[in-house]
Picture 1: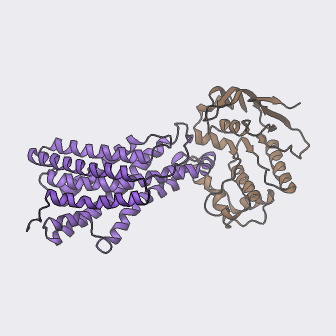
Picture 2: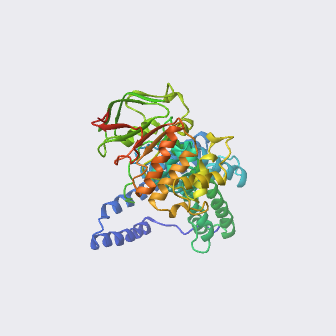
Picture 3: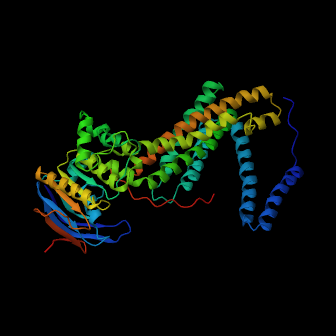
Amino acid sequence: MSGAVQIGWNQLALALGFVLLAGGASLWLKLGLGRDLIVGTVRTFAQLFLMGYVLVYIFALSRPWLVLVVFAGMIFFAGRIVAGRVKGKGVPVFWPVFLSMLLSYMVVSFLVTGVVVQADPWWEPRYFLPLGGMVVGNSMNAMALALERLFGEMTNRREEVETLLCLGAEPNEATSSIFADSVRAGMIPSINSMMGVGLVFIPGMMTGQILAGADPLLAIKYQIVVMLMLVGSTTLGSVLAVSLARRRLFTPAAQLRPLSPPKPKVH
Amino acid sequence: MISLEEVSWDAPDGKPVLSDATFSLAGGELAWLSGPSGGGKSSLLRLINRLAEPKSGSIFFAGKPLSSYDPPALRRRVALLPQTPVMLAGSVGSNLRRPFSFKVAHGQAPPERDRLEQLLAGLGLGELALDQEAGGLSLGQKQRVALARLLLLEPEVLLLDEPVSALDPESRDLVERTAVAQAAAGRAVLMVSHQAPQYSGPLRSLVLRGGVIRQRP
């Protein structure tokens, strides 16, 4: 490693110019995004510096329980974000989301650090947290897409589902094609990323490693592992979350619960 | 075969729809239920099919409360034809055979081609090919394919929600005759319709008004 060029406070301040540009555009075009830009910028600084200090502390202490608590905390916030995106349909989904994330991301992160990368010990924070964080960050979008599709389809195809129930279908049978559509919606972005990676974009992690002075070939190997683990984690996470959320849409007597109509997206 | 005792039900928005609805229907009986739009006729059928749960009161099928049956098995014995006929993706034939792929139909052989063609012809759909896409049918054709799909289950109770609303007088007559034949075969048939049946044989006329079911004078 040759080491990265240091970024000083003045240079960070210079980068704020990009936000000023966006703020200017918001004012000029009356986009009404000024407040969001300010809050977003402050949160970017605060959250990342906080994460940086937490990581320095955790790396120094190097305790497995602490690594797992931090990981569970990351999943908790991801779960809240996903549940927030699909809220308003009358069915709470935080727990299905949190449990599916905890289970699937934990399994994938363990396999990647312990079996593929062979970090010793497997919870070595320098490997487990960044890799696990990438699993959480990327897969949570997949889960949100899958659940949004599930609720959207269940609202739009309510009559079809009830017709199948009337014909003696169990809830799983009445929703089998909606289930498949929802899981597919969650998996497609990570599969598309595999198609475009290296041609259309250079992934963030690889960029970071290369900027930090790593050998590009080593960065590529890590990136391949990341891409493949994302396919696994989005699949596991989407299947689990959609299964658990689907159960909540029916009563024990196999009746479809009322759902609120989908609201227009604001994000 | 079916009896309701003081059944009340509120819409999801809390508006009371049925209040103390009481009536019974025996095997072999054909009943026509009418009443103002939004008066709860469809909701009543959904309660009997257990797609929804009453707020209070009890519903019995063959002397036992609905809750004592496994819901998918109950829905095949007390079968509901919803107001909007929904065709599943695929052909007319696959629509008719689909209910035989469910877990509840374990051990039941799907109906043969001849049986399907005969059933469709009896409903005035002799011109339909079984491999024709079901999505492209007219509303009236969909209504009758949906009825055929239900009849294949050989239910003991038939709940028909506006089964003739999109039909011409000739097809309407065929559907009504089918309902009469089903009752003659010992089934209890409850038909919801805005229009009085053209049929002139024995018929029990019920009206649902103000949440209560009464015999039509």
